[in-house]
Amino acid sequence: MKKITLLALVLASFLGVSQEDKSVLRTIYTQSLTNGKSYDWLNHLSNQIGSRLSGSLGAEKAVKYTKEELEKLGLDKVWLQPVMVPRWVRGSKEYAYIESQPGKTTDVNICALGGSVATPALGLKANVVEVKNFEELKALGKENIEGKIVFYNRPMEAELIQTFQAYGGCVNQRYKGALEASKYGAIGVIVRSMNLRLDDLPHTGSMTYGDLPVEKRIPSAAISTNDAELLSTMLTLNKNINFYFKQSCKQLPDVQSYNVIGEITGSEFPNEYMIVGGHLDSWDLGDGSHDDGAGVVQSMDVLRLLKESGIKPKRSIRVVLFMNEENGLRGGKKYAEVAKQKNENHVFALESDAGGFTPRGFSFDCTDAAFSQVLSWKDLFKPYLIHFFEKGGSGADVGPLKTESNVLCGLRPDSQRYFDHHHASNDTFDAINKRELELGAATMTALVYLFDKYGVNPITKTSEIKK
Ligand SMILES: [Zn+2]
Image (tube, rainbow, N blue to C red; front, side, top):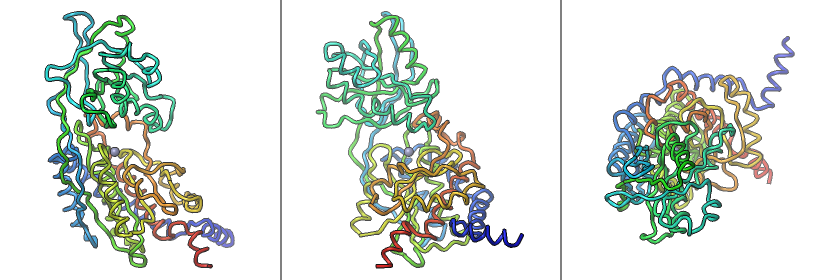
């Protein structure tokens, strides 16, 4: 019996799973589930502050609030990093209807896409052309599109298990739809909301005009999935129906804002930085609880949980709350730019920006050596039902920190319900489950603990020492 235990221990340590690590992870998860702060912080961020679109009063309040909360944690440093951000405002609520014959109208739910121009003050009314993609647009050509409203109606693919893939397969119609349609003389664009279910909520999100001159910029709005279905059905019955919409959004001059940063300085390698983060800005329709209030408060709690669990990191651990991920990525770019100027060695960066749902694991953008090290930790995560460890993308804000040797990663929560809420008015605090949020914070903390303890790319390091 004893022999077997010993053998198991030897095997476990060979596999990188030590008893110490097991008990540290247990402590981290217990702390998060019994004494976590993420849910309280999110409650304040969502219900007291609300939406946090870049340049808005909400964003400004969120900077102040999160800085003050980080200051209460007794970190080694907390500071604001200035960054100029775009300021787009929605204006009064959008209005739209389908006109099947003169005087016979059906109201539909739309919202302007972020960055879009307004319609004329009295709105815009025209015939509609439905397309599924840019190829169909091209095939129709100017003769069929000029003077009309283009309606992009390609649904997210239901059969994809990872819903972010379905999003990736669709989002170009939202992001570049107006830019492409404008080339053929369209006067407006309506895009099916990026939502897997059928409901009445329009989902906003960023769009671009690229280099289009101002006079070629056409208004662009999202329509709810139910109304996209309705419009499509009505078009099959009568190609000549009109669509009317009115929106009064506006792009204002850039304003000063900030990334919020806190740090526990490393005890052995203070010049090696490991960061955890989410984005502090949100869209304006809901209160941004899932996108990305959840990632913000989880990242804040990582540093607190390390302290509460008695872990003294060897490397410097930072929480970075990025500003302006949604409509510009200015915060992520600024952070990487300053890191480069200061020659800071960022060995690891973890982002949580996929909702506050039950964590499943992580996606890694790293070397094979670092990834096999991660795989050796799989058993440690098993008790917490964390099993998804794949190579892939990380997150938009940490992306600019990429080097040949560092580890970038993203928390991967269950994504089945995420797009029910993403960028819509129901991305609100009541859609957050406290335990799921806390499990995410603990899972992130556990990964940070392990990478700090064992280092990033250990194989490369050993060979360097041998030289
Ligand atoms: Zn986000």
